[in-house]
Length: 191
Ligand SMILES: [Zn+2]
Image 1: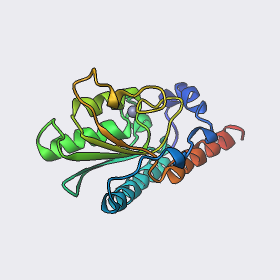
Image 2 (image 1 turned 90 degrees about the vertical axis):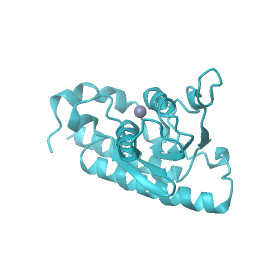
Image 3 (image 1 turned 180 degrees about the vertical axis):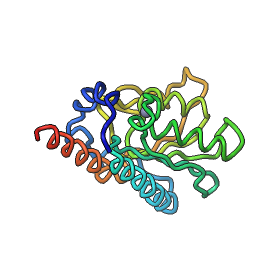
Image 4 (image 1 turned 30 degrees about the vertical axis):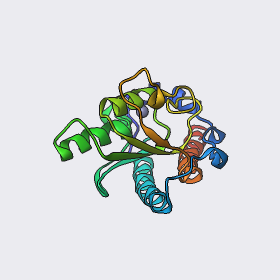
């Protein structure tokens, strides 16, 4: 699929995301509460990774997200910024809208959001607005992350909602999908 001209103009931002910019940092991974939770986290992150891979196949920056309510997947989405020509079409934003529709409420109580890359400030804001109680993400985003890297929006006690966070789940794979995507982009750009 040919990339729309609209998408090219903001490609510069993405080019700043170098392969080594998605560190796995397993040493900083927060421990899960118990082994069952850890296994579930790996399982649902694998689904988010499938979404990320679907994004890559569509020439979108490969970030995927799923939202789980009471053990059931109520949303699964990937970045669609190019296709929709919408700067807000991040995986988390689309997943949050899907989950709210599925649950019939803007309040996503008892939900866990899984996302392959650390949420940006916009998505962290949406997570707070949706009152999502738990967020699990894969790779850190040192140039855009608003959970730990640049800001800690989900733990800011001045806001009316805080989340439980688990970072670094399948981080190496989540980062590798992004690194591979940008490596291909650069290779194609040199043709
Ligand atoms: Zn975002």
